[in-house]
Length: 267
Image (cartoon, rainbow, N blue to C red; front, side):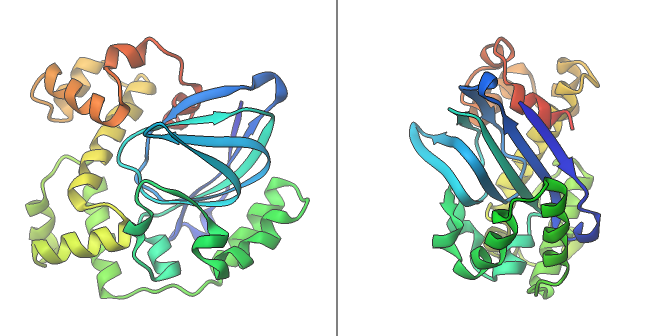
């Protein structure tokens, strides 16, 4: 397995990562858990066979896929040698680009050609050309530098809410966000869900768990210390959240190998 990242600095206002995922013939079949990172994605499967398994339902990943927000982990597998290039968007970016309710994509991988033909027709010539990954990324940067964005008071408020959540590493409640943005809770929840694809409560809870897992995988601090650092009352409280996000107990997870998850959590 090879996971590479590319320069997104020209469009860092909307793109959080460009990534390339390769599996050789010798490294397949391959399976790993995918833990959501609070971003939406577009992925082009350049060749090979990949699939996602969500609640025991298999979704083939082929051509250009748009992926909404996920709150819980799911299984990823590659059955043959495969190569894909992906775009990880800032949480509000897809709404700014498409101006549509992003919550409609919740817990889904959908063919972009079916979901938004216009964006598909912009991306297909870039992904479909037989060029090095670096050249494809360069062309993507040029595209997104010139794309029209729907930016208004609502998106600015949700961007501000996300900045607050990230600055606190998810260790806050909704009222602390409202104290700074000065809008009603109902307005925040409705706009956040439409623009980001998750409710602010779910996004905050996921972000807190993700930060803990990143610190654990990078071996920055002992797990017991992390549990207290991230405001879990005790280990049983942490175990309950762990099972929610990971579909398994901490013991089961720590006794298995999840190379893809370990790789991107360590980034």
